[in-house]
Length: 96
Image 1 (spheres, rainbow, N blue to C red):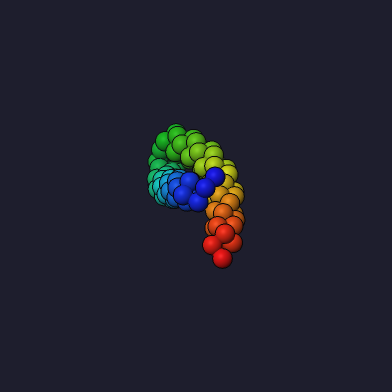
Image 2 (tube, one colour):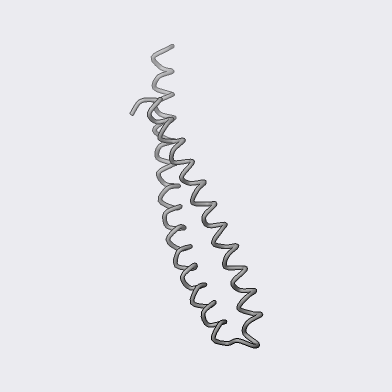
């Protein structure tokens, strides 16, 4: 892979990594709201609190999926970054 292609790939992977981090933040925020709502509903509406708990479990599973994807993308980022660094240093040898 050339320098330009490596740089384009690095930018794409970086963007995807940012998208995953944003999605994880949104899920964390949703889980916080659900926890507050479940606590409020637990006193008067236990069946509603159970539904909130089920939703929280689904969000937790989605969060784990995103965390796994984020770990894979981080590994890809490191690999592409190393390839790009190697290409740049190799190109600099030709110039000197």
